[in-house]
Length: 547
Image (cartoon, rainbow, N blue to C red; front, side, top):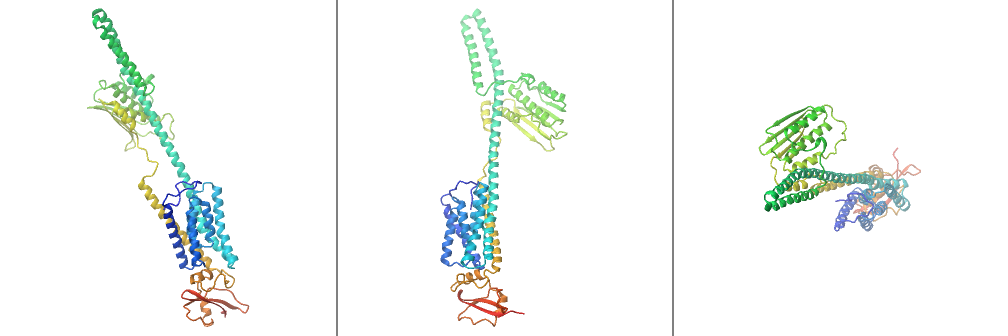
């Protein structure tokens, strides 16, 4: 059973339709169990059956309003528990709920303190002014009810509400971080596609320019040698120009056609053995011990986009070594296998682990590298390996097919992100754990209530015999015991042989503890006699005190 919403809020919560009946049944069971336990030990109070039914129904109705009016429900039950101690566990539930949901600390503290004062005031009015009892006894009983039914569950609810606020803030931050991560990965893919588009523009555009140039020369030659064919050459030249314009338009959809410049410029030799060796030499010149191994034939006959991917993998891996593993040994291996090219860059742990990041990288190089490899239909794995090394491994097909389809697949794929909401199975387990915890907490509060009220009951509620308004004939034994206290064996022994005759058909008599003496040092004893659990006589007599 869920007593509170997930997050605290001052806004009233409307229970789900059908939940009223469940909560009413649970509240009724809690109220009945509490009354039964208190009645079995003589701590249920002196109210008759009709009053118990009316006040119990009122307490249950008030508890059902805790979702819409939590503060009013808490204050109402706090006043009622001073008259009906059996409503203590129901009040504890409402105190926990109200304290957990109220958002403003000053309002929560004000309501909690006011609710804790009400049992004291009501107990004082009921026991002192109405029934003529001792005010110390009334305050002690009200204090036990206030602590067990209001303060302890209220403080626990306050801590749970603060935890809910913290969890809510963490969920929001996690969601924002996931959105930022997705945005960064998307931007990285777009940037890499733009670079790929630029390379395609350079390669295909160069070929189309050559076709157009040769078509123009052919047109001039045909004008002199075969004028009837010059129109065919002109159509070829115009078609190549149109293809160039359409290529620019199509590739422009992927983004601005950015190009690498300077030492990173891509050429027809990019990705060959000489090119990779040049990258290795640059790292060696920077102080990084790099070993280089080339297996198989050179990649001069492999498609340019594959060679460019090989260059990107090696360059990105060496760049990360420069940034995050300065001084680490590096092994670069490129192997041309049947139908594929495998690139492996492994670096060991740095001599001195970096204490802080350099801040030089954008963190998107590997995302762009994954996009490039996925577009070609390859596979890229990045991460630590046993032994403390870090590995970047790429397997690229030498003859990639259907690049457009693979690009669409790569755009839709991505690292699986952890779900922000718990799975249904986890939610059921969490609710079950919450229910068990709530039951154990209520049981613990019940034990504390029994212990506290039992200690209070051992004291003298009255300076002398209780007034008729408090104890009168017709009451049950439990009602009498809840006012005067349990039977005292020493007092019973003192009354033996000195008490007046018991009424006929008496089944049991109770001799509560007393310390009241007369002026002649005689012990004043009050005897309560019952017939079939109904009080039929109240007798007062004195006995001599033992020397």
